[in-house]
Image 1 (cartoon, rainbow, N blue to C red):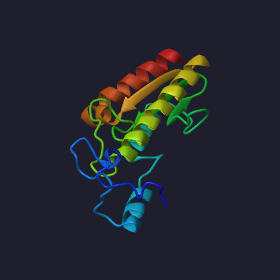
Image 2 (image 1 turned 135 degrees about the vertical axis):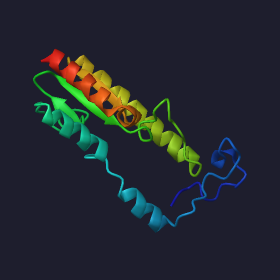
Image 3 (image 1 turned 45 degrees about the vertical axis):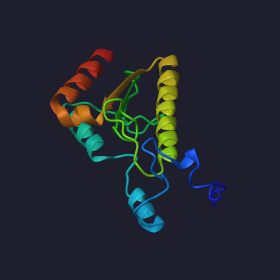
Image 4 (image 1 turned 30 degrees about the vertical axis):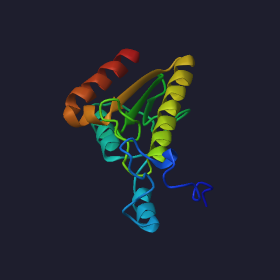
Length: 157
């Protein structure tokens, strides 16, 4: 149980920028839990599509390997590729905080971004090249994104 339950409802801690109560959720706790449990952290449709495209182009890779658990890893080339969703990684172009539970989401998404920065720094410090592909890049022009990855991996080999 949260210690914040007894705070006054007019406390700014619970208010979003629009002034609405950020604790309100239209779904029950059980339904929200069931919904959130279905969100995949690996082997997403976009990630699988990228993997299939690279495999069909003759590229072999490891998945969810090493520090930071990159989506695709080319160990010999020391290249890590991350397929980042616009929501979970707070894309600067599409960053949108849900209207319910604003403080939780703002904190959660900022922690995700901070973890991404730390993973990038650590891998770079150890001589790895990092490629981050945003979900919207794949959706807008999948072939261009694949050509970019192919070019970078080919250069690094």
